[in-house]
Image (cartoon, rainbow, N blue to C red; front, side, top):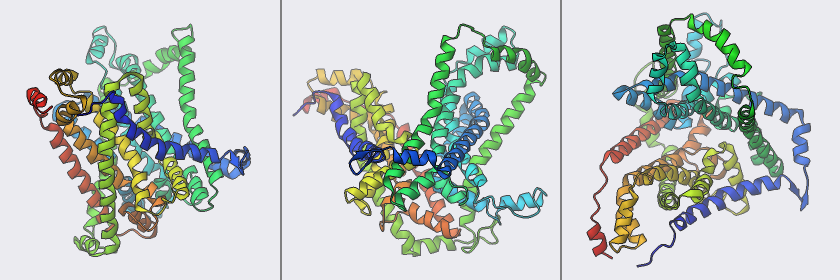
Length: 566
């Protein structure tokens, strides 16, 4: 029986896959922006700088991303605090109400807001009834609609990131500060806020980068006269076929995304080397702002924070409920409440091959990606965790790298790559392109499970005479099986929900998200609501399966049996 010299070697297939189909296409895409006819040039970057159109679009996109980030962080912070301080079943319920919208297809949420913000939608009717407007406003296809959609999609990311940091705050810190005589406001500003600030910064940076490169939401909810940068980049790459200029614009977008991170790093460096331990802003806050905040009783602040958190939860959950209601309404209109309840939309969906064929194709592509992610991601997660040190840091960073990019960047770079190597318009091209992020997601999930496996069990197995591969197959796999299944399951969902890459690469091999997106550009009907409802149902089933699998106790390992099979 062969043995494995180093566990890090297990990560090589996944690393090679990501390098070939994600890193290389991105580097090649950027390289094209500075090479024309074999010579070096910065003409395309000069065109971006000198063009008032590109400059206006970039500035509009940056300002929009900053506004979306501010909304997500300011409105999401009270909800993150509520999650941190909740206990028992309340915490589980609140977490589910945040996580499920996060996992729900972006396309489902975009469809919900398209219907809600339409000229005849519930939001416009409510605003007119309240006297805010005299007539319905164009909310759905405007910058306002794009901002609302972006905030709704990215809010859970901000909340979960801040909550992760708050979960490390020991309750004793606040109790001690209160026992020493600090008011609730001063406890928050002096203890809780400084300890949670790192999560706020991380959440803000993540939301900003994702908003900067968002494509689906601006296309579906934005205005044609107020394009954002990702839309312009996609037009240059797929319509004008000006790949060098599209590559230069992609690099400019990435630089704009890195700018806040550089600013944060510089600010931390400056603050670290300042001699004054109490900067002027802190002295002003302690003398002016805090006394003003303390004029409001602490119970009032608590009530306001909880009310805001509940409103944010409603903002996240209600659109998904509305989709289900729309799906049982008349097929030719969307109204809330529906004029009548009917299942005609479901019958029309299952009887129409224009829908069922893309659905079956999506299942096939996602199943292939799930298997790839399970095998390559599982091997990579184990190999990197057991290698540890710099190998773990570098390897995990490389494999997770595609998840950190704005959605439009890997999609367009792979689109150019696929056209060069004959993968565009083929099922293989779609499966390979989707597998990159599926593998990244699987590695993150499975690595967290592998870290919790007691290394002594593997040592005992080796001492019993088993080889490393035998130990991997008979000890590690049974213990990590729940995590492997969950990782493969969510890799499947990630591939099934993927829209941007198939939109550019699939050609005639239309998947159900692409079909749904194209139909949304023409008209909104209950059939689309049916598809959205089925996607929500698929998510709920997958989540229930994941919870059931993870709740099972790990299989018991008989080391004597392992040694006997050697």
